[in-house]
Length: 262
Ligand code: THG
Image 1 (tube, rainbow, N blue to C red):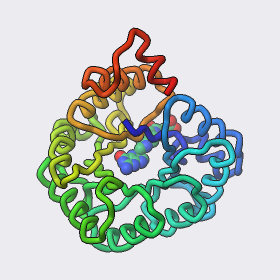
Image 2: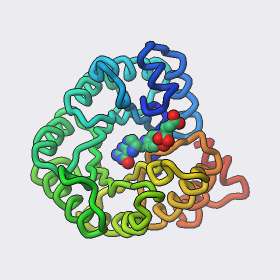
Image 3: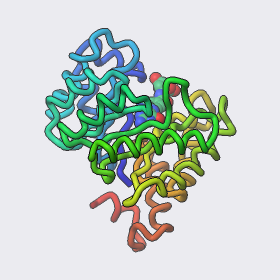
């Protein structure tokens, strides 16, 4: 599982404040702790309150790269904010994200090719997030076809069915699980599938429990990657055990430690 740490996001009050005050310590601490906990990449999102998202993105990329050497997932709806970050990254980056809208694809596919990045494609468009499985598949297929037309390597494409909170969109959980299974059949070789996990529990009680169970079900359906909180130890243990049951990790009595050591 390709784990992307979610915690450097201006949506969190402490992070939003650190970005506004250019407090490096808060950001670098989160970067180091997430990588130590098993994140192979870090999501970087300036948050909704950023007044200068372009320079904030650049400050975040530089600040994070002073202390860790992993891929950065540049998370913004604005292509110019993503490109500002791409100019500074040292490792292969993740563009987070394009939608299925043609004008987004026309900007972000050439950008992904130019900077040789991974690209996340969200199965949504101007009309919003689909409310069923078939529309998710239709929009993911649009993105996969556009990627093929642009000669973008399918192994670098990450399709995201868009997870919604279970308290306001309860029927969408199963649609997302089934969409994951079907996304894998869209191209040959299969595309990778990713979710933003914590969306599922926003506004609920028992957030960790809901995240954990949803992640295991999604892994069972073929999930390759997730944006999640790697500091949630029970979540990480569940992820490791799920991969063990699916024969993606070798069993030994100390399998949790063994996974963490590699
Ligand atoms: N797909 C892709 N990228 C994404 C998402 C996705 N990026 C953003 C998001 N969704 C994934 N990251 C988060 C980060 C934080 C939370 C949820 C998803 C979260 N934050 C607290 C909340 O809203 O309750 C913040 C409150 C606080 O503690 O201050 O839950 O789906 N490609």
